[in-house]
Every structure is written in structure tokens, then in C-alpha cells.
Image (tube, rainbow, N blue to C red; front, side, top):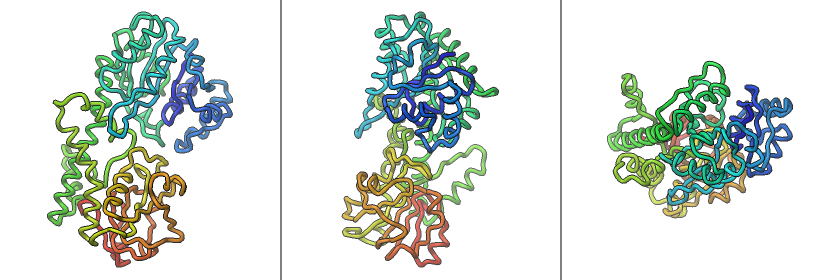
Length: 424
């Protein structure tokens, strides 16, 4: 097949390489010329996906993948178009369709009869058919489910292991009609590895809600774990021991508590589900609980050492999770704001980000090789690099809050530094 992939970000480029590896002719489109130039040189612009380092040059050299900044050029002549362009939320958690709307209008310009269009970007229920399908029909002059075919199939992969996740998780597919669904199923069977399960659901709306349901489940479960952690802290109980014991029963799958929830998915996609539906009560409550964990953690520090006004506090790990170079909606920013509201001087350290990035994000850069004084340190991202942290090397350290329950308490006991985890 001739396939266009619109959006060559951390997920789109691996998809393009996957399709090209299966013998299809792929043209990728992206508005970022740096990404396009790198791909056309046979280099991966995304260094956090190890399989791309070898995969991109292999398929580019073979002539199976090229890139362009022109979406109409990529779409022209394509039999299938896969769209993985961001839908984001603003600071007020309102949904911004700007990027995907623009990409959809560009796709419509050169959409030929019979083309299959597939959206993998996470979307609010009804968006594929009612918003994007209508745009494609208007812009192309073709009729939905007759002149062109449309389906939604949510991405279900994690950056850093995308090719593995493509093989091991079922590919959920829902079309805007029976024929669109049939064609989408045939497409994914042709582009994914042999043995990968491709599972049809009733329609595009079912597929859209599937992604929102699984993401919101994680948010609600983490909120429950955080509620348990706060209760356990009040009662002098180690919540990790409780969770481990409870999860030994097969019907219990309690997640881990922590200082907050970050990333492109969990803090964002529940809003796609409940922003316009006041009858959904539990998901917004879970969001509020998880957003409160930064303030709760700062209050915990103040309870242990007193006022933080004028005191140096070190936040370890700015990334939203361990060992990634990405800080989207990181709970480090909630911690930063709460600490500054309490008058603290806030340092930040992260081996994945340079000092100028930390400054832009509102942190004073901290050098573990030439450490300044810090009265309190909070582990926000459990990077592997922090596993060997010696608390004695941080001058003046009195309290270490392990926001991910990732380190061993004994290290801090030996150093004479007070240690407290979340719910421990």
C-alpha cells in the first residue's frame, strides 16, 4: 500500500517505520522541518525510542519511507492516511482541537475517492465522525463512508517501547460504518506484525470511549491509592505493605500512590470524557485528588520541619515519570508552585534536562556534583540515576520525601536524614 502518516512525533514516526518495515511505501508529514530533515537523512529525531535508531536509516535507505512538510503532498495518491496529530488541553484543561483541525483540512485537499482515513490521536467521543469526518467531507467534496472511509483506532503504546507494545496489545478498531470498519481491520492486519490481535468494536464512538475508559481507570485507581496513602499516613501504617497484601487477592489491582500524576495522557484524557458531561462524578473527583498531592506533600514537609519560608528545597526529577526526557503536565510543576507559595527557594535537578530548561520551568538548577545546601529534598521522578543517591552529599539535608516510594529507607537512616514516603 501507499500510506501517509500525518504527524511524525514520538508515536507517529514509529508507526511509519512499522508500516515501512512491513513492505509498504510510506510518506510521513510533519510541520516541523527539523524532524522532516532528520528522517530524510536517515536519522531518528527521537532518541528515546531505541528501535528507531536502527529502524529509520534502514527503511529510508530501502526507499520505503520519506518525509515532507506538506501534508497534501503526503496524502496525494495514498490509499490510507493515518493521523497522529496532538489534541491538547490548555492551562484551564479546555480541549484545543487546533492542530488536528488544521491537519484534517490539509488532508481533505488531496483526498482521493476510496481513501481510508484512520485517526489514532485520543479524541472525545463523537469527534471522529461528527467533527473530523464532516471536515473531510466538506473539504474533499466526497461523501463519508462512500467517497472515503473513516475509522478510529486508539494508540495504546508507551514511548520507549512502542514496537513491543504494538505487538502485545490488541489493536482496537471502530469504523464510522460497517464498510469503513472492515477496511480498517484489513489495513491493520496488513501493517502490524503477524500474530498481533486486531479487534473490531461496534463503531468509532466505541473505540474512542475505549481509550478514554482505560486512561481514566488509571487516574481513578491512582486517586484511590493516594486516598489510601493519606489515610495510612494518619494511622501510622505503611500503605505499600497494605497494597502488596491486598493485591495478593486476584480481584484487587490497587495502583501505586505518589506525589502526583503527569504526562500527556492521564492528566489530560479524563477531561475529554467529563468536561462536557456533568453526570460523570467520579473522574473529576479523582482528577482533583491527584492534583492535590503536591500541596499535601508540601504540607507534609512543613509538618516535619516547620515553615519553609526562605528555606532551600530540592525537587529531584522534573520529568513526568522515571527515565524519560519529557515533562508534560509533570507534578514537579505543582510542587514548584506550592513550594513557592510557601516562600521556599526551589531548586530542581534532572539528568535528562539542561540547566537552561530548568530555569525556564521556574527552578534554580542544582548540581549534585557541587551541591548547595538544601533543607528538604523531594523525589518527584524515580530516575535510575537517583538509586545511588547518598543523602550525606547534600549539605544541610534534614528531610527526604520519597514522592515515588522508590528508594530504600535504610540509606537515609544510616545518613541520619529523616525519610518519609507517600503513605509510609
